[in-house]
Length: 342
Image (cartoon, rainbow, N blue to C red; front, top):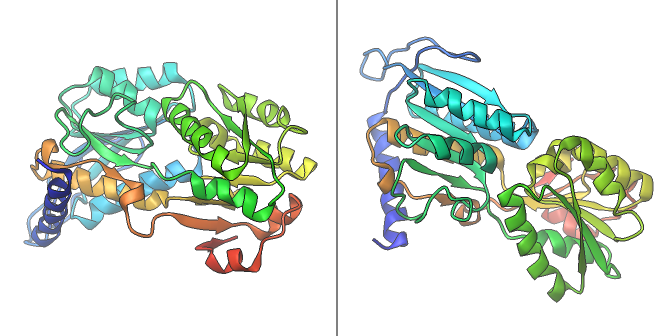
């Protein structure tokens, strides 16, 4: 079935859910729950239990989780218990969480970011799994055909074009020759992004200098290794780097190196500027998918959604105070285009 038709069908299904006022609920959770509430027809909502496995704590991923919950409430699922687990960047912990979820009677699992989603997909083949904040679900082994998922997995990808972020480097400093990137080479989504960056820097007259960090404690040293070697530093879609972005901001401020990011929250936390998706919206889209699944729609009829295909989701964000600390002066036309200004 053509992808365009599948996407149109998905939109129709979402509309049907809204019209029907789909109702669901939940049971009990280690982290949060809500009591049973009446449906639009006066009945009591069914109880549901959803497991959430998140790779690390940082505002973008936290916003995705909240967006997911908000969407379920919007669709009438008011009696939901969430078992929220966070691997805090440790893959052994992510595997343990997956094992825990495999042994529990969950109605659905939300995988937040690539590594934690991979862990649950590896072990769990029957419970529905919805992911969010995953860059390339195909290369990550989560789905084979994004337009028609064939197993128990679908979700929302945060994949966006890297070119606008890199173009900022040259727009703000036309004489820039090199750009650094801090990332975790053990994360498949980060490797995918770095390959995109490598392909994009050449046409912009830039060379790429890579610095890897396998844990958040290594991020500052990775950023420090770029000092004197690059004209700007980027952090794009890497959870390890984003989780410790304050360490990179510190290095950039001390050495007057502009920092550019791939999400609004990282700009808010101290990057000078960036382009990226609204993670609360991505989480909300995943919540709509979950509502369909809990309402009885087959996962095969719920295609993967890509951030790059969502209208208006590529947002320019600028942080005036952070930019000044990093020696950056924004062109007036850039400031006027910003969706978010901090």
